[in-house]
Structure formats: structure tokens, C-alpha cells
Image (tube, rainbow over all chains, first blue to last red; front, side, top):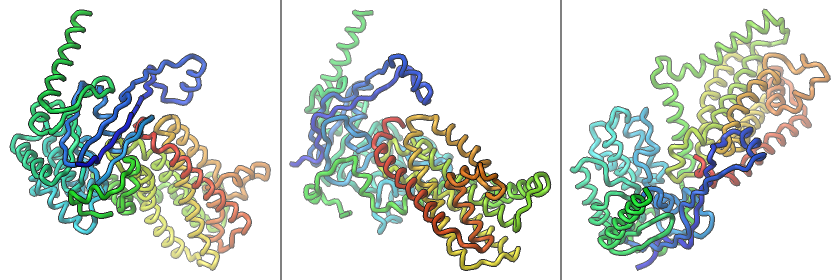
Length: 253
Length: 275
């Protein structure tokens, strides 16, 4: 097997001012007194290799750095230090329904989204149609998106991303949504993607789904990789981690 | 780019830095066009008159300025209707294009913070969307010039070049200020004031000849004024713009555009941190 995503010693810090100085005057005044910044160290030296055909789940508590890592893999954020490189076509679905505009119809939205994802122009129409069909929204294709339910938005986003037919798929918290019939369909699709040796990196809090689908799970805590390995092992480690913290908190309290 | 993504093909692909992915989009132009058209469409939904508003708006202001200037201020300028309409239409483009352009990154934060795409696309499409209104207005203007019997002479060939300067200037300002606006929201307020002051400090309602000699520098340092003055000369009065002045105007506009491109390139990678 061969690596398709490689991160080496990645650091990412966000500077969050305690008082948010968004105006220039506030900035100028704040030079006079020391500004207190909250240094949020989202990632502290993360090295990860992801192989072709792997289904990798990233788990950890809120703020542990998983979503930041996904955004770095996608190229949305640039690491402060360290390197990230990828090979193959990548498609990210960091927030479903994104780029979707409520005032546009289902079809127009998919077309716009498809342009952002960079569908090849040759079979653009076929793929747009394919996405709408997959999402089961054929009846609604000329309806403004704002008339659709949230679940339908999400189905449409996932369907559109699938049509990009990329080698690597980055997914943030998407499995927990959609009705059971659609989830069933997603599972079938995942099986197909696995057969086609596609690579998926997924951030989720739905541990059952992570265990059911991932070949490998990486556990994050406070910007570090704690452990990586077989889903059932890592998930139980995560549960311990959460319990330990709770115990410490109770003692302190 | 090879579109068939067979499993084995992946390993033949070169390693890339993911932040360079946005540069590899092949459908750059269609993306700009789509964003602009959708924007234009959304702007006029829920309105009975739809696109006609983009014409009604400048026509009403033109009428208002015309009444105020000729009756109250007693402005006496030959061919004043054509003079005024051309000025209003060109200023409107600069006004709309630059305010949309400067705010474009923030306005599209929802898409830009979650999807990888060339970020300058939203700036260009904001300008193109203002450009669509501008194009419609120019057509109305041409119609009016024809109706008032203004004859186009050879000097009119300078007009497209001056339009090019205006577009370069508007784009330059947008590229320069939009990434700074993401970090400092003051830019929005500041630019709004610049535009309000600019409306009066630019010879739109009045002629540059109405400006006393000792204030004339305001006109010569104002790139929009330079473009407006030469446009009126070439289109309305059938006079050629001075070569030296025209070269300076062009260098001015291109200089601001290059500065904008440079600043945008430097700041765009950090934009997602603040959106």
C-alpha cells in the first residue's frame, strides 16, 4: 500500500484576542497596553500517514484538533510549521449544504457546487442529474432550496460531493444525519468506494458508525495524536480518556 | 488533468501541497461567471420589475442631479444631459464595483471557509456582477447619445481604453482592500466614507473647469476623475484626450491593479484564519 496523505510535525496555533479588536482604532489603542491573546494551540506536532484505500476515522473531544487537521489536509488552512502533502484528486465536505444558496433552485445549486468542486465539463449535465437522482430529489429539482428540509440539504450535499469521483474524500460530521433509508444508501456507497480503493478521512462523534466503517481510528487530545489503530481498541481508549477527565473534574469540584 | 480516477492512477500523481489545490481548477472562468450570474439573479428575485431596476436606479438619480444642477445650481455646461449621464453611469460602476468587491471575501465567508477554491474568484465575480449592470447602463447611454444627436468621432476609440482603466482601477482597489477588510472591519466604514467624499471631490455633476485653479490638483490626483474627464472629452465632445495625461492615467490604474494583485497574493493564504 502507498501513502496518499502525509503530515509531518504539523503545528497550528490560532491567536484569539481576549477582547476582540476588530477595529483599527482598538488595535492602535491596544498597543499601549499589553494585549492578552489566548493562544489556542489546535495542533502540536502532528504526524499522520494515510494509505490509499484506507477508511480513517478521527475521534477526540471538541477542540482536540480533528477538524483543524481536516482543514489542513483540504488546504483551507496552512500549517504554521511542518508539512502536509497529498496525491490524487481530493474532495472535501466540511459542512454539508455549503455553497448552497436558499434562493436558488436545487439544480442551480448543484451546478454551482459542481463548479467549485471542479467536475469535468464534458459530462457535467449527466453528473448534475446523477447527484439529484442519488439524493432522491428529482421531483424537487426546480424548487428553491429554501423550501427543502435540512435532511434534504444534507443528502444533496453528499450526493454532489460523490459525483466529483475523487480519490480522497474528507468528511466532517456527516454520517449522523439523514433518515435511516438514506444512511443505508450511504453505507452501500461506502462499500463501493472501499472496493474502488478510494480513501476516506472522516471526523465523527458517532462512535458506532466509526467502529462499523473505519479500518483505522486516530485519537486526538489537546492537539496531539494519542493513539492510532484498530477501531474497537482506540474507541475504548477514547472512552477511558473521557472518563478520566470527568473523574479529575469531580475531584477538583 | 486526468479525470478518470482509477485506483492505480493515484500513485502516479505527483505529491502536492494541498493549499495549492485551488490553483489547479480548470474551470476558473466559468466559476467566476456562475457566481456573478447567480448573484445578479438573486439580487432581483422577489421584485416585480426585476432587472429593469438596474436601469431605473441610475435614470432616477440622473434626473434628480439634472434638475438640481441646471435649475438650482445653474450649472451651464454644453451637452449637459450626455455629460451627466456618462458621469453618473461610470461613477455608479466604480461605486458599486468597489463596494461589492471590497466586501466580497467577507460576504462569501460561508463558502470560502469550508471549500477550497481560488479566493480571488469571489472578488472577480463581484466586479462582473456590477459590470452586468454597467453594461446595461452603457447601452442606455449609447441610445441617449444617439437620440440627442451626439455624433461619435474617431476620438471615441479612446473610450474603451478608458473603460479598461476604470475596470483595472476598481479591481485593483477591491483586491487591495478585501483581504484587509477580513481582518479589520474598519475598511468597510472607511471605504464608504471615501466613496461619499469621492462623489463630491470628483467632477461628476460639475466640470473640471468649474474647479478653481488652486483646487485643481484634487482632480488631477483623483484617478476616477482623470478617467471621467477624458471619457467625456472622447465620447461627448469628440476631442482626443491629451497623450501625456492618458498615459499617466493608464499607469495610475495599472499601478493600483498590480499593487492589489501583490497584496492579495500575500494575504490570501491567511484569510481562512479570520473568516
